[in-house]
Structures are given as structure tokens and as C-alpha cells.
Image (tube, rainbow, N blue to C red; front, top):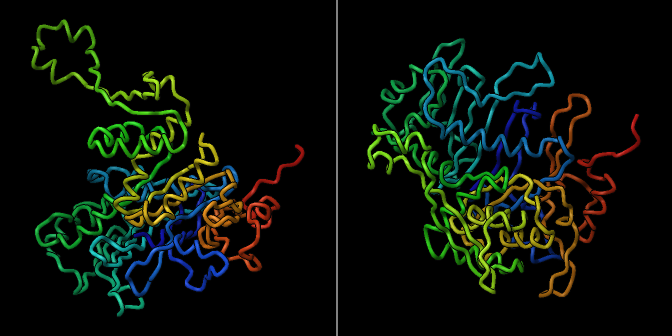
Length: 435
């Protein structure tokens, strides 16, 4: 369960920027009781409730995508393979609008792992080394502030470390693994090591419960593999496509063998067994409409393919929990479909894993009041603390993130989309005549 994510010195982000999933406990929804479904209880006394979704709005080039990219960078820094000593850290992508600004990128994540422990994990790095890395935890109901487990890093190329009593592992072995490298994180070096397996829940949460979508089509093959894995998965996707009236009755996944180049096929040095092992099978999806017509992907609309592609990561998050950072969720999707996807995260019967999503969008229909058939009235889709904006600082042109909850005078019966279009919350382009 993600509580907050912070980043500094990354692409358009200069100073520390934090996005909070912790629900504002002072927020009340007397006039809109349905909004109680937009949060879930954590069973953690310090952070009793978390948001199920955050909608992030902003102009083009404001930094929306850079927040999603920073989440991806954070994950890959931890999950990527070990770098050789002296190799540059290619993920270092600092704020570039100020040449004299020479500081490391810093990531910080506050989360509750699958072992129900709340952790605070932070690290700083540049292109050549990890400056520092530290892990802290909270004892539920006892600790008001985090208690350090370890901090390790380099100062003037000299290794320093601070292992507290709460570091349950083999400190000497941990240092042996770390001291010969300056460009790898301590955490992934020590998971699964004898004596240091207490670190596994932190790594496992990041590996299994932190997802990202940049481009819908990037998920295409992953969704096909997920559907082929279990018949029930296919049924879920088919029902989703049918729900949105896309004229799909069934889906078939087949694997077509890609032919080897002619020079290899005819080369006597490669026997039949070697050629068989070299051949690759490519998954191919066929969409079947109600009258039995079989359609390949080149006959399908971009919107249908996008919805198909993103279905697997969405269903996995809804079932298993975790958090999904989703860039431009509204790309090629009808506004009504967009609304229903967001509603899935707020629906307890569907979002049984208490999955969380942060998505960027341009289509502000989600900020409108929408008609609800059951309640027979227009309602808000989000609480105020679920709506976030990003604008560029006029002086430095760095990205600044803030929530609607920070504005005074916003009422439950306000039409947020109208006020947003009137530039009351910033994060919109001022379109005028050319200079």
C-alpha cells in the first residue's frame, strides 16, 4: 500500500515534490456518502486510510509524465541487474534547466509492505555513485516518527554506514557485498542472502506491487500472456470488452512460429535440433465478433486495442493490490469508458485487493459531476484530496505538484471542471495570440 512518493532533481522536477495517497482525515463527505468508497482502511494506526486513486492534471510539458517516469526509474534502480564497478548509472536524468544545479536525484517511498510493516525507504544517486541509502520503519501504534534500520553510503568516496539494532541481518556479510561497489544499491544486493532475508519484504513489494504504464501498446504482449495463462483471465477481458459495447464475443491467443533467416535454415552447421531451439513463437490475438467473424489486430480500432492492452495490469492490481502509475489513461478511450475504468477502482466488489492508481489525463470530464442511476442524481467522482495538479514554476520552470485539497473555498457542490477551465487552480495553458 503506497502512502507517499517523493522525488527531487529528476527531469523537470527540481526541488522535492511529494504525492500523497494518505487520506485527509478531516475530509467529510456528508453530502456525498458514496465517496467513502474512494478510500480503504489500512489497519495501521498512523495512516488509517489511503486513497484508491489520484487524478493528475496539467498542461503539456508541465511534468505529468515525468512523475510517472520517476516512479519507473525508482523501480528499475532497485530491480535492474547489478552494475559492474565503475559503470555509469544511466538512469540519472537530472533537472537540466539550471546548469549549476549539481545535486543527486533523490527518491523516497513511504509504504506498507505485505508483512503489514510500514517502511520509509530513500536513496540518492548521480551518474557515478549511490550517495546514500537508508531504510526506516514504524512500529504500529508506538512510533510517531520512523526509526532507522540502516543508512549506508559514500562521503568523499569513503564508505560510511550506520546499522541499528533493528538490522536483523548479518552486517559483516552485507558490507562485504556492498563495499566493493559504489554504483549499486545496498537493498537488492542483500536480498535472499543468508541472514539478510528480513529485507525481502521491501524488495518483494517493489517487484510485485509497483506497476507502471507509459504507453498502452507496451502492455499488449503482457496481456496476451496473462490471458493465455488462465481461462478465467480471458473471461475477464472478454466481459470488459463486451461491457463497453465493442462487439467482441471471444478472444483467441495463438502462437505463430517465426521463420529463421534463409542463410541459417540452409546452413549445414545448424542441425534440426539447434534450429528448433532458435525458432521464436510469437503470440497472436484474434478477436471474434458475435457473428463469428475473426479479426486480426490490424482490423481493430486503436481504442479497442488500447483497452485490451491495459486490461491485464488493471485486473491484476484490482485483484492482488499494489499501485499503478498510469500515464495518459485517456489516450484513445471514449470518455464513458474512462469513467467506468476509474469507477472500477472505487467499487469494493471489483477492487477487492484495494489496488491504487495514479493516472495522468487531459480529459477533464472526470472532474464533472456525473449522473448516477442508482442515486438518481449528479455526483462527484473524486474527493478533493484525490485531484492533483502540476504547474511549472514561473522563475525556474520546475514542476510543482499540489492537490485540490490545498485550496480554500472549494465546496462539494462546486463544478470542479468549470473552475479548472477558468484557470482557478492553475495547471492549464493560457492560449493567446502569437507574439
